[in-house]
Length: 432
Image 1: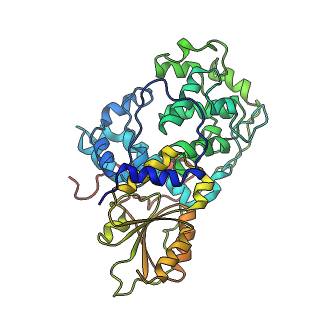
Image 2: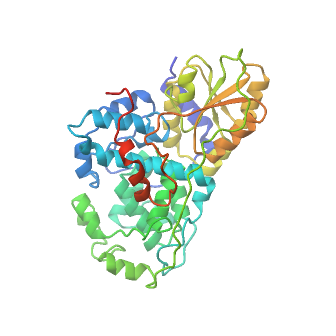
């Protein structure tokens, strides 16, 4: 049977030693907190409006989908959202902007599969040289939402209180933190990773690199004019720093203030796609009809391709202490994960290194093989390879959003989109 909320809260209390200290005040207004699980995901999916999304998505009160937490954890797939978007528009072009944003997520995942942990290092020489030295930690006045900038403090409160930020607010906050406050993008990316419900190492980290100009042709600049345009000026009107804040001025003014004038010499970045992930392992024996289905952070639903392939097999989710120490997930983020798991039947949850825990289960005789969904995560891949070295391992891939067979270089999204656009705009076979 699905677990109740008390089950979730009990597990959260047991994991409290790993959770970051809560910082910042609560939001000034009631803001929604996403609920984990497939039921909530399908309700949110049914309410999307792709056509309105296309022309309002940059506004903080625009018709964004807010589906990213479920997409990040495999509760919804990008192909499933694409199919739903195409099904509710008069013309496929009305859904193209939304589908191209899904393709950005797909693109980030493919880079993660190719580069692994290297996404945490500068992928390119910075597009512009900062005029100030970088610091390696997010300052306390930012974490406590006491900078005095009405917009920044509101964004921080929303992030800490809901685990979500509009993408435009993420870009503004990241740009200000990196370019105005001199905080290294890695520190900002780690902070977001701790709090966001959709905290995906690929999308989050590579987006911070894009803002920083270490994976883009130029750094992203945040100025007050852009803020007022997309927020109807609601932050600036009441801000004590109006007219004298860090983001006053034109883009050229801010570029002159934040960056050295000489352009950097930058070779063209090329990133080859990763080969399909198939860890070496023997196939399952004919008598082993019920493997252990290992659910990971990328596959927290019965729709996981590994779970769908074995509907009656025992599911296992392992809370990795290394993950808790590395990403320091907030209580809100952990709650979302556990709410997803609470809907899954036949589930065991454990705490420990996945390769060790799975090895112990296999040696106990409960099963002789493990089934897992495909993932770009290098930590999951290493653990799976350890298991696959001694036991049968099945890797199951879900439906792809795009046909990437013609892609030979992941160095820029524009080149990627030109190769995959046609396939991205086609619904999954048999949906219509």
